[in-house]
Image 1 (cartoon, helix red, strand yellow):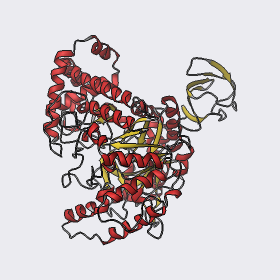
Image 2: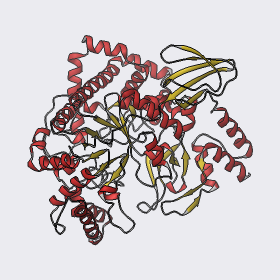
Image 3: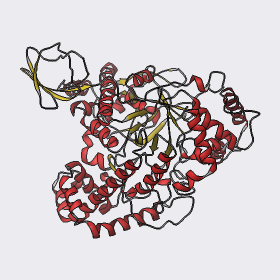
Image 4: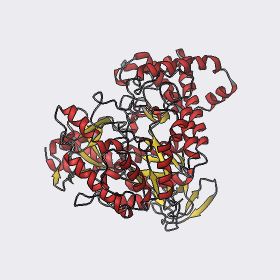
Amino acid sequence: MSDAAVLNLAEAAGMLVDWEDAGGVARRVSIDSLRAVLSGLGFDCDNAGQCADSLARLHAGVADACCVVDAGTPLTGFEGRGRLTLESGTAIDVRPGDPARAIGYHRLEHAGGEIELIVAPPRGVGIEPAERLWGTAVQLYSLRGGGAIGDFAALADFAGEAARAGADALMLSPVHALFTADPGRYSPYSPSSRRFLNPWYAPVDTADPGGELIDWQAAVDARMAALRRDFAAQHETPAFAAYLASAGADLKRHALFEALFAHFGTRGWQDWPAAYHDPAGDAASAFAREHAGEIDFHLYAQWRAEQGLARAADAASDMRIGLVTDIAVGIDVGGSHAWTAGDELMLGIGIGAPPDAFQAAGQNWGITSFSPFALRTKHYRPFIDLLRSAMAHAGGIRIDHALGLRRLWVVPNGASPLDGAYLRQPEDELLRLIALESVRAGAIVIGEDLGVVPPGLREALDDRGILGMRVLPFERTKDCGFVAAADYDAGVAAMTSTHDLAPVAGWWRGTDVEWRAELAGEASDLAPRAKEREAFWTAAVGAGVAEGPPPDAPDAAVDAAVAFIAATPARLAIVPVEDLLGVDQAPNLPGTVDEHPNWRRRLPAPAAELFARPEVAARIDRIIKGRGR
């Protein structure tokens, strides 16, 4: 068949046939890889006829029945007089060229049909330059006080202590629903559904076995047993009855998935008997009738989790921003979302990253995300629902891998990341919707714009009021020095470290270097890190937050890093709790699963004890002074 037909289809689908790698080298996706990606996206392309049919289906699926525009944009897409019914219910007559004024979700009726008109503000909620806010970040499960793992009650305690210490924001690891009946799948970035909460975090009374690492199996068994006891005692209360009555169809289907997943005990819905693959089918419906009590239990678990998160948000309400929740970039294809609404997703595709200096073979993260074609045909409702769920009890959100708002590296199921390609996303529409929902919820938005950033993306995020991220170890100059504190961008969240990096103390000691060497079976080489330490210390001295020669012990380096980030012009300075404490082990070591205790480390004490420590109080004092407060 003609390669030209495949190329034409690929470009129409938004695939970047030609792209530039991390080293600036021009690359071109092979025809075989294009075919594999297109097939994974559901566009058959084995011959010219299939390419033509897929192209026609592609064009038919992007009919302009929904328009997402900026306020003030002239109305188009119809002729003559139209009737615009605003979200408020007010109806006005309009003509082509009239400006779209009121922000919100409206309906435009005209002689040729109907258009859903979504009007966005120019920017989302922001932080004023004079405010110079600060906050901390915490892995929720790591908190002490909720038994073997931290829960939303422990989060409320931590938020209250952070607020009393003067923090403006508390950034969280994702609280998305995982696989409740499979405690072995505890990575917060591989959720079953991003719409609903992880019931492991519902506040219950369980014993704390102690220890520095979480035994997830034992912890979840104890928590779910306690939750079932609570359910038996409280499921007939009027409050829960009211919650059941108000539960939407999506939540009920999620609860049904949870019950079926526990019943079949498999990795995902694809392993269930075929009759159960359809959530609206006879088999699933019969199961729902026969196991109504079990489904009610999973609804109860969601209710308790929602209550707990709401109380934590109340505890953070004295902060300028409050809780900042995290939206993972994708979901597990065997999970609740894929089973209940698989037509919204790219089920034949994984997402990841192309080859770079750190991962020569590229990355496939084992998750997928929204189909850009489905988002358009569904009027972006899945994305809007996701934003609203993330903002429901938050003063801000963080969007994981915000580069995916422009393009995602997609890999056909079973293929190597080397055989992937970039797939464009409806960037303009997504950014407008983020701004609109930000304003409606009064929530700031942080975009994780790290890695190989496409040209112009950071400017586009900034134009919409989305804060970028500037992480200390990555902010380097061409001569291998560190960017001066005064030269940091203003419209960002500046951070000492992240969950994927060694905390400053570990970076100073080379803990991350030693971990990598041990896993590779090699001797560690700390000489490059020694040069980096000297370069950072030079920058710290230049910023006036350090003096003298670089120290051997990490405590002074942690103090300097905290003060350095506080001294930047960034709107928001974030110092993760690991750096407030000066610990040296990272929550996660990317590229590992069982080799490193990812997502298992616990904080050394409950929140009140942590914030009472002299070194923590001293570092917070450095932050406050550096922020000019």
